[in-house]
Image 1 (tube, rainbow, N blue to C red):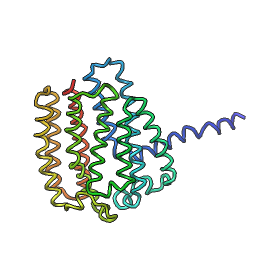
Image 2: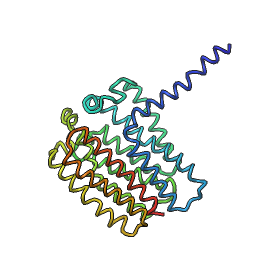
Image 3: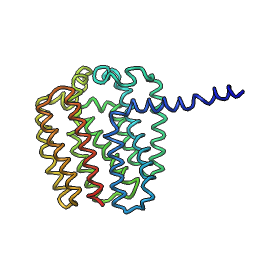
Image 4: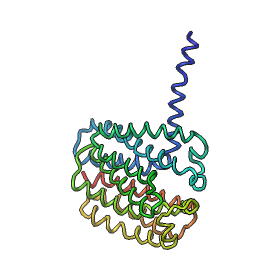
Length: 297
């Protein structure tokens, strides 16, 4: 009898570990562009609202849970419709290597999307949750990713949804918060195409019309170099001119990262180098939002 009970109980931890492995395999490449920076911006909101210290652990737990669902739903959806592309660009992805079947991924997408919308409603950010779901449905399932402007528009909406939710989970949105959100989200409408440089071979193979594929790789590289060179000036004028010293120092670190990206994008042109350059962009995003913790308090 005891042996039989043990047999019934053992699969539960193994199932949980398997689900964690599956989640990690889908999301590991995107956590520094979503969970980490969004939770950091929520910390900026917590600092600005002078919320009691005792509330901080709860804020962090809710943000980690919410933004994990934010990226997991997108990655499930995106990788479900991109299996053939991933065979060329990202052959390590779970649906390509057979970690789970597409049917199992669809089931997980339904469950996690329901959980995401439910948690968004419970946290008082349902409008931003729904905006993000609408953005990835458009991007992944309604052909938005195949239009030259579609990916960029979806990512702007997604960034607004991400940062607005991060702030609103903690405290109502303010004019200062909106200045930060829009100053970061709107330029991302063109800067996010930096990611397409590393994926251009697969995009061309499946006929996806990204900005890089339409305008041309060389022209886009020089455009990104100019944009990342000028962007720190705009950030100083809009965000840092009257900020505390520590925020300006972090902004300066972000400016150095931006200039490094500008250099790399024209001088280092391999697909591996382009991947590293994009990772520097996600690091810039994290550093910039870390500066908000001190600029907005």
